[in-house]
Image (cartoon, rainbow, N blue to C red; front, side):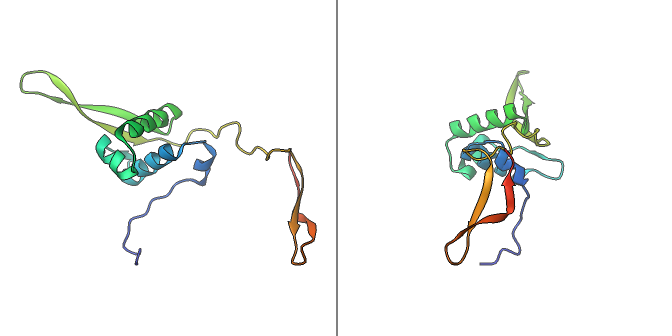
Amino acid sequence: MSILGERFFKLSNALFCYHLTPIQFTVYSFLVSSAGQKGKCWPSMRTIAASCHCSETAAREAIAALEQKGFIRRVKRYQDRPNGSVRQTSNAYYIQEQPPLPASWGHTPAGGGGVIYEQDEEGQLNPSARGQVSA
């Protein structure tokens, strides 16, 4: 299976530090992959849900959470009707700069700091070259 002709998109590794749910992560990834050079896309909720393999309700909730967390900006789009009224037709989504990292980023694992050990070929535990973990 060749992937050379496929389209690719980039996501920051820091995205894993924001505590996004799997659906939020997937919806954000889909929006990023759909956005053009100006960071704008306008897929329907049905398209988002189908592409992310979730319900439209789950997609709406993910969009709301991503907007609240500052990852995207949603702009409602409207159309004039022949009778003079206006109706919402779709949403445009703008990919924002990633928000500041959460305060919990970079925390040490449960148990605090200490020496990191690595097991050698003989099964002996030796202090890692990485040394101490900051608390």
